[in-house]
Length: 377
Image 1: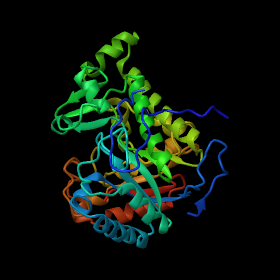
Image 2: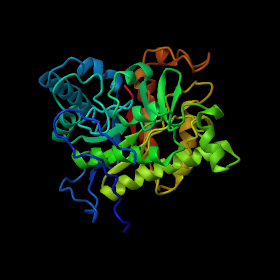
Image 3: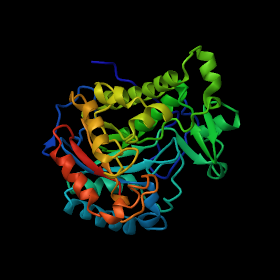
């Protein structure tokens, strides 16, 4: 048994309000045997076959912003009852989308869409668990606030401290700030994020999506690359991301081995590897990086770059050894919509064939490799 790792925060957790740390750098249900390292009496709720949906922050304007606790609770109840009817058994709830928190946090400021006096994550957990729906806390590891948003935050926010001191651990890309994967302090902060959530909430897992390296330009992390002495920028960057993924996986498992850790990368394997430096082949084919992978195969059958059937087969080939569960992400939001990046042959597929997602779901259900599917609504 590995020694339990702690990423300690500098001040005690406050149970009311969103607060910011002064220094945080540093099919059937399955119930695994109780972990020797966990102190929680909560038994995580997870399923061998996931039928999942994402609850993204871009929808918070609809059912959170400007809503009272009662209004938010009613909206979540209605939403989850709809998902329950569809036999959805798992939700990925967006708790840390852009350097903020939709939960009680000492590390991050409150999310801008949460302007009520309540804890969104706790409400989602209470309602979902009452319906036997599993909840995985969804975080974006590296994406931070926009320049405009960050200027309004207190100076004791750790990321703002790094920016104000000119630290290379935070980089600007376009109008937004991103953490730099090249530094251990950044990885520690990401692990702190997961640990803060696990220590204070009965989540069933931690989930990250596809915000890895935001830029291919060498200037993004040139100081660290040159200091390291490496000669291959691509391999070095992939090693940086893999180190974070492995550290986050270990943080989850060493807190409670029953919790699940999942990753949702882009569906295009080549793009993952060459533009975001995400070594999805390594993570999917080997133990120790994730419990499940949810590739975002948001493509129609006629997509000119990544047609659905061929892309699914590539992912199935990676996952065939069974080390990591393969859950297929499907683009429910594209139904009756123009598909801008699909090419001429595929751009109208979801309009002309609105049953495309149903057809894809059926193919996934028939797969001998896939262990579920997830809808991005």
